[in-house]
Image 1 (tube, rainbow, N blue to C red):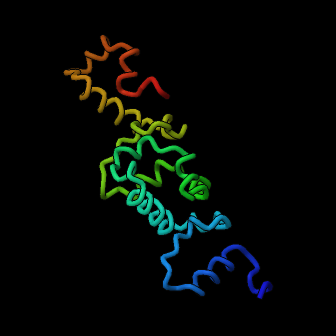
Image 2: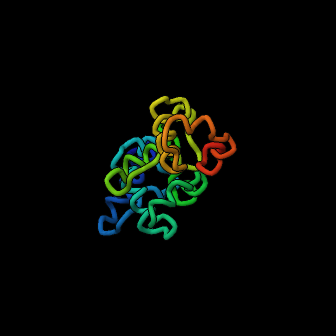
Image 3: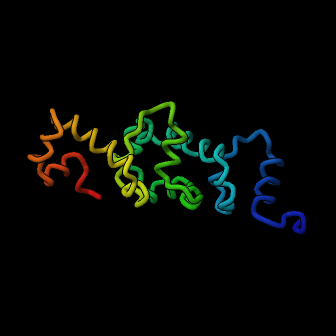
Length: 154
C-alpha cells in the first residue's frame, strides 16, 4: 500500500476516495502540494469557501485588507506561491461579484505600482473623489492630500 502512495496528492486522493460522502476541503490537509493551488478552480473553491465561512470576508470590501497571514490561517498558504499576486487572484475569482479598485488593496505588488495604465486609473479616481474640476486643479493639489486617497501608503 505504501508503494502506491508515492506522494502527498496520492495519499490525499486515497483518503478522499475511501470516504466519498465527506465534503472534503482539500486546503485543510497539511500536506497538500503547492501544485494543487495552480488550478484556478481550486483557487476559486478556497476563496469562495473563505467568503462564505469567515464573517469578515462576507463583505467583499473587506478583501482589500486581507493579509497573507489570514490566508495561511485558513489553510491557503499554497495560494501565496502560484506566481500571481493574491490581489489579482481575488479580483479574478470575484470579478462578477464586485467592481475592484486595485489601489484600495492594503498591499500592492510592485508591478502594479509601475503600471502607467493603473496610475492613470488611480489619478482619474482621485480627480473625481477630490472634486477636481479641471486638470489645472492638479497644480494646487498637495502631495499630503494623497494620504486621504491611500496614495501616501505605497
